[in-house]
Image 1 (cartoon, helix red, strand yellow):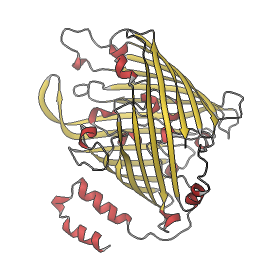
Image 2 (image 1 turned 135 degrees about the vertical axis):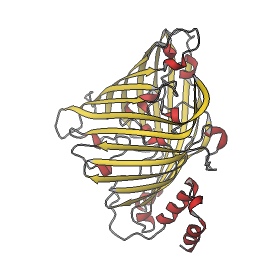
Image 3 (image 1 turned 60 degrees about the vertical axis):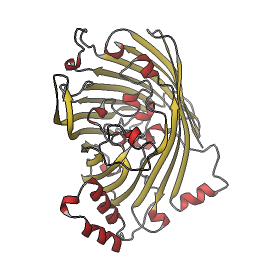
Image 4 (image 1 turned 30 degrees about the vertical axis):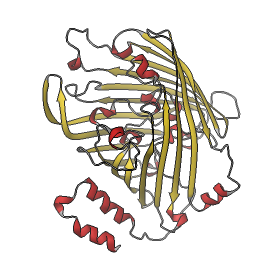
Length: 444
């Protein structure tokens, strides 16, 4: 605590950059918390890998490591190792047929310090990965990536944070290195889809450099549930326009560029807003649950436009998202039909891909099988701003993408998800493409 006090004295007002505020919050997290009972059944803090996790009963290929995994979990330490792959191929397109596989190995650790050290309502999360393979979306020239995982080949520490909760999770603070798109503009039903704008987050959130998974940047966040059904949250992250180049390993936090702010207000009828997470699970589908969000991100940095090459300050994006259970076989159960919708907009003078719309339907447990299964239909529409039309070229057309997939959990440690996708006006021009394949996920 003496070191924290000394650090506070050394941070004069003009020194309170994002780096300084992060240090102050870290010190706050080390303050002793009042002791109270902690239920281990409370949900652990969600990581950026939550959208990749199967929704049925979870198991592990390597079991409990001779009981060591179980003993660690009782002490508040959870480890997860997973392999996930999108194996996709195109047909009936202008480009020659090609098979592409994007592979990812991820390791995650979650620590509940209430169980481990008696620091109640204090949590730690860290995750790292190796990923690589072929990017079919780049090969086809699509605006809508067929895989929600494909980006850059890398091996790195993705994200880490310390989280503190107060008043039964009605107030939550987080500081560390994490991505905006893992929690803001993220699709609540992401695990039920493969293509990026529905299988991860809205695909054009990067227009004002909202960070994404895996090249996360230093960040801090506060979540408040002032009423049972209302959730307010806001985060500040360090802008980095080339994060893979500046921090290739993820171990050297980079405070570059302007501080990007992202905020959201959410409404969840009939639910406790403080317990809502970015990505859903099987339990959250029970009953006629709904989740409605409005968010905005703002970057005060410099941006240029096609009509005015002189940099101008400020860029922003607005998004609206809604997910709702539409019909249930049992009003208190999870079997039935869900719907989802999202739309975002950013200034067309500064952003080439300035509008996106997604919509989808999901049927939970449609097959009479003893395993968890879903069937999902998704639609994505991408618009490009006419301000960015190349001279002499025909105007852009909206690109359309459609997906149908079935998710199956045949074993607790295995997920299979066959998928077929269709795209028209590829790259906002003309032509079409058909993509088919499957996702595989193994929990070790």
